Image (cartoon, rainbow, N blue to C red; front, side):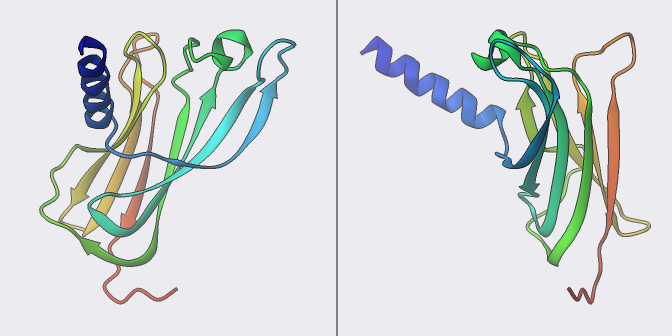
Length: 155
């Protein structure tokens, strides 16, 4: 009974902690590891959950080796984001500035990488910011991308 409750609790926490899952597009090896997978840069894609027609592409470092192979390694804070309009834009509900649209755990000690969205209403542009919430050397690494909301979008 206790085990089933614990598993249910863990499932709820995981669902709440990760607003969206990303689809891996590809990766490249950067450092050879004799034991376990190589260090690599992974490219992932995810759709904005509240803005149909916008897809973000995220590149991030993924640590390999034995610890990386079993999920115990801490990934670096290096990440980049590029968001693009891929179809007609439809906003589902009210957008809150700074809303998390993607979140990924980078280590066992609660280090996460997040993508948040802002709406520049003056220019009618969506701005996406990726950053790590664990400060490295006093300055968090980050990257930004912007998508103009095209009224008459054509592929």
